[in-house]
Every structure is written in structure tokens, then in C-alpha cells.
Length: 101
Image (tube, rainbow, N blue to C red; front, side, top):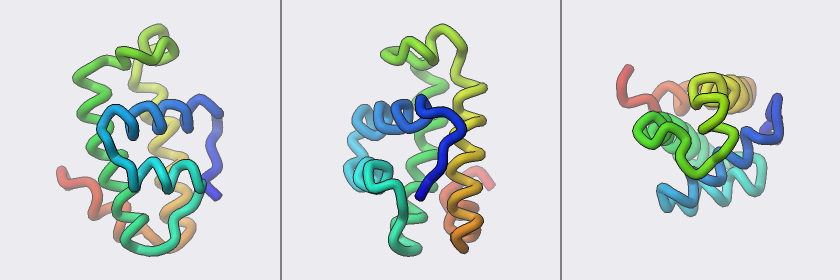
């Protein structure tokens, strides 16, 4: 199961999954686990794409992000998702999801 340091991380992820219309990523987040390499890549790509959207909207629509800024929350989320995927053998998918590497 994906373990978050703060419960707000999951709420932020679900907000962006809805905003970005990423139903498959949302299903994974709601389930709390990936089943295979494909889902690991879906989750990774979603995270990296979400960074761009969150930076553009500066957390608009999420009071927590508007008050505290997106940087700290995106870093918490990074560590939660990275830690989960890497510890479950999906490091290659995590790396592949970041098109900027």
C-alpha cells in the first residue's frame, strides 16, 4: 500500500487526477497500490505531469496549497510515491515516467 506522510497528500493527488481527467491514475490512488509495471508507469507519468499543472495553477482550488505553497507538498508526494514504487521493484517505471530525465 502507498504510505503517505500526511493524509493531505492523497487528497491533493486525487484533486489533480480529477482535474487532469486521469481515471486510471485515480483508480490506482483509490486502491492504494499498483498491480504491475503498466500501472507503475501510469502513476509515475501522472505525478510528473501533475507537477507541471500544479506549478501552473499554484494550487488553485486546494486551500492548503494556496496557503502553504505547492513546493513542500509536491516534495512530500514525491517521497511517498518514489519510496513506494522503488521499494516494490518499479524503479525503472518511476524513472521512465519523468520525461525530463
